[in-house]
Image (tube, rainbow, N blue to C red):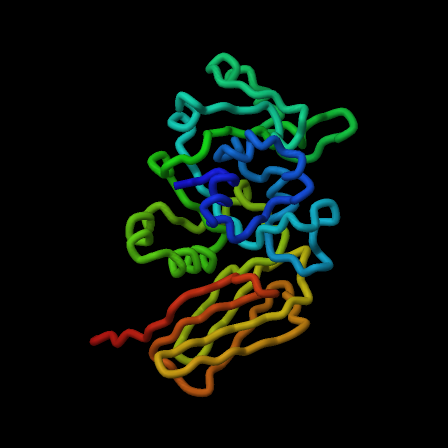
Length: 279
């Protein structure tokens, strides 16, 4: 189930907020009582928030808008837009300029070329930023019947999501969860974990090959086996272009859990188990 911000707060489910407090303060309470969708990925909100950033790399305009590890839920648009109580806007609902609509004729006449515009533009004569943020609203909550795919930004982030899910939920949604390198979903301009190669003797971490936020970070790697646990930390860790970071274990482990944090943001979690192949 997806809940509105208001509903999630009442239920005590909103443990992390990646939205800008300044933008939320100017957002109508009616909007915050709805489940909110964008028509498109790579919105202005996503641009300001996506990726792990150290304090000196946070957005100057929206410093508290920070979503280190975004995950995309893709819903069937026909199902959502034909719900009886569905409404939609012609621009970002954090702005008083936005208009609300609900009919098929109004949907047809939305400024689609601006909503799906890509590339550069002159902000002094175009309202592209506002239009790219057009939204779809469903009151209170929405079940996951129309959920088609769950897209992660990398293999490492897919592995992390699967690791964190309850086993029953993981079994139900595994076939919908995918890692994608499609450039039209994520900006990929800031740090993220690309892959993590695990073995009985080491863990090799590959971060985003190019990042506008290389650090410095506090890198923390937690290793837990059945009998012991340990933490490796490295302060002032910098993400270097096209270089990985490896950590070697003092002895071989046939089974362990691993978690990797950058500045207390979880960027990777998985389990390793060595399997004997009988041939």
